[in-house]
Image 1 (cartoon, rainbow, N blue to C red):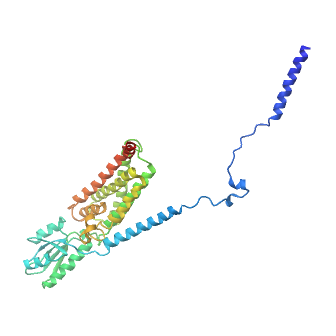
Image 2 (cartoon, rainbow, N blue to C red):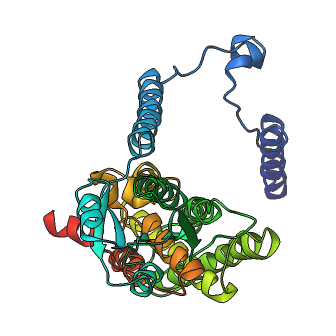
Image 3 (tube, one colour):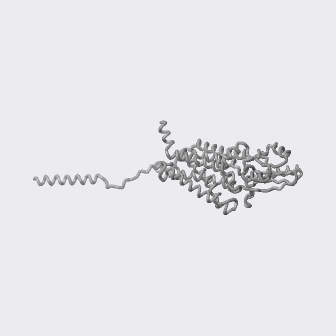
Length: 375
């Protein structure tokens, strides 16, 4: 009887297990639920609803902003370059007192009296003046010009010199003491190098900063020191390419390749560091500096219109903006044996130092620390 009870309990347990097995269906792979509006509504995916609305306010702001930038560019370039005129162009003059007084009274010239033609030539060559006029009491006159200092200035001085010579009943011999390259007689190649090197430097610095990401400390692969080294290398690469193409391939530049490269390298590095430092500190807001360089730096550079022919505002910007400083230094290297390049190099060094300071501030976490302190 005990055996029967034991067998009954075993059969009952077996039947319970069987019922449990029958009640639970075989295990299947977990099914992933898809939130598909098309399938739930019975419509194909291409017939879904309209989706989120277009941010028309942002679209309008972008359109207005771009139009404002275009208007600013047109205004800046037309004001600076649309109506150039000679304003107190420095000229060395050796002539009789009556002629000297007449030239000195002209608002077009700033007359520097000199004793002889040799002294006048020295002043043109060291860039103290843009030209020199010698009118001896008897015999033909001599006009010294420097086409490398600005083709438009040379043209105006030739016209004025010929007019003075005709008034005095004499002839005029014209001597160019700083001729430009035969491949670029108007001397515009260096201006194009400056403009497009600025664009390449600014765009490259912006894109590289975006690719690398935010500055993380002073050291490390994404630190301030690494970014500084990258910008210097990038500026060197861009400058050697521009120098080789403009000097060797086209033959438009005049001067030693190494001196030309070093000048352009300092200029490119100054722009790269300024953009990189500001971008590291304020992010995309650094585009404002690029727009300032394009709107104000290019027309005040002295390229298409030399500095003596610009109005007061743009003439004052010329030695301050990197384009004007670089173009002045580049012309000094090309045509004047390095004379008069000091001010331009100092200006570029200041731009580079400012960018380095901004980059250092970002690497040290200055904006974050200031925000925490204020909180």
